[in-house]
Image 1: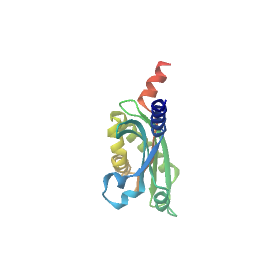
Image 2 (image 1 turned 120 degrees about the vertical axis):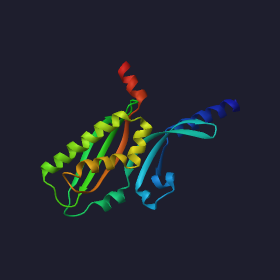
Image 3 (image 1 turned 45 degrees about the vertical axis):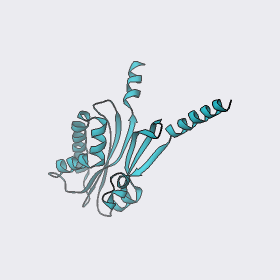
Image 4 (image 1 turned 90 degrees about the horizontal axis):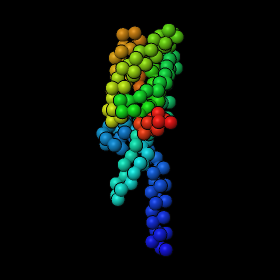
Length: 178
């Protein structure tokens, strides 16, 4: 009976840990530049085998204090939200933030959103989940958007404010089968 209770306890513990979401900063992973404390990455524990746990990337976002420090008077803040799918079937919701040096009119804001959408739709569908996570966490997509908009608008900051996994490849396959 004690062996059965211990097995039940172990299964229950693994179940609880599999629901656990870990929050780390980019600095914790790379141990590099102290300015990387402002980027948070969230992982969900997927499987636990002996002493190792495999995780799934859940979310990447700016720290709230960093976001607050970016916003200034007399400049425009442009937000844009887009759902996109990677080559291997993962669906992400991307929230892009752009900050200008001065106020922008609505036509320039609209042009910026269109350019950001084009850049994301051209690059992300050709990436695997690993490539996409690296591109979003290491600012590759940000620099692509900044380079594309440089001809029209001079921006102070372009970034992926939040990247969130909305559906895994397995959940997508289950929906298609239903």
